[in-house]
Image (cartoon, rainbow, N blue to C red; front, top):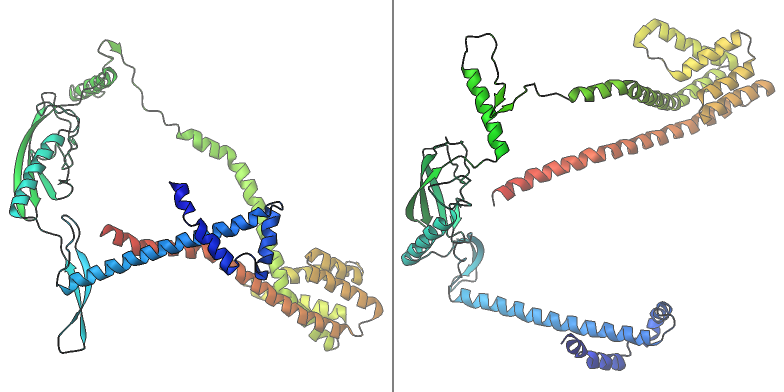
Length: 456
């Protein structure tokens, strides 16, 4: 049947392809070449493709026309019913349906909008009585659950809240209270002789009520041999505890049911976990220490890049004022040391200036000035400082003519480097904030959707 239906569109598709020249136009040449390539040069694949494509288009067009007809008929039918002043109510037991209607009055062109909540269809009195009686019969069949006799109930009951496919609602009242829950679950273990519980089921169907009273005899559940034995052990221990309360020590039973009992406190094996943590503490500390070193090195590099533009500008200004390279270098290091001594712990040490102080001490101890500048750049381990150290060392040999302008250009480029670093830090901060933002979005969505679902 499937092949026959598929063949219905073969002739119309062939006719359209021939009449419209589908697949034979110059615009289709690239697609034809691709089809031939995929089919390994088999020319019949081109005609098969265009034939299948046109057939599928005809089937989809036919389906679209049929769907449009159905929608139009459905819309016209609803309009006709409204013109007669009738709206179909939701079926029995359904939720109310909110409908927006437009009303127009004779003799005026204006229309009004009415928001209407249409309630479910109501049963007749006879139908309610029939449903309530059927619900009582249904309840009598299911309320025992897995039990077979109401005079010997040893497992949970089955007390449904709705019956007859939701048309009848049920509420339960237990006497005495606290032995069985409203869902039928046994909450309190009854004595061996059992407990009689009276159950009253109040059934309601659209304002009409009816009650059904039932009586069940609740007994303890049937235990296996092992369960019964351990129950006897617990009973014997409780009896031993209640007797001879005036003695300092309580004596536990040494045997129960002919079996010797050995008592001990439950073993707490959590100490193994803490022992493992203690044994792994050196490894954790080692990993954390390495991580801290890497973090500190990263912060040092960031701080060196941050201070580089200021340092170069200071060098440029001092040399422009007539100081030599060593004079400007020593002046910057000396001002830094004065601030440190004056401010004490309040002035934070800076890696770049500490390296300059170290280089000044090297020169005082006999290290050549050019070598000290090169060492300064190597110790900083950043390309810009290595370039600065080499620049100072080279100009020391050939003279400081033009060094101020060179340092000024270096300062300008260093400011651009600082802006790039700030941009990178901003991008990293935005990436770190992405996860908290996604989590906050999830919380907002939960706050908005969960109450809506709970109110349904």
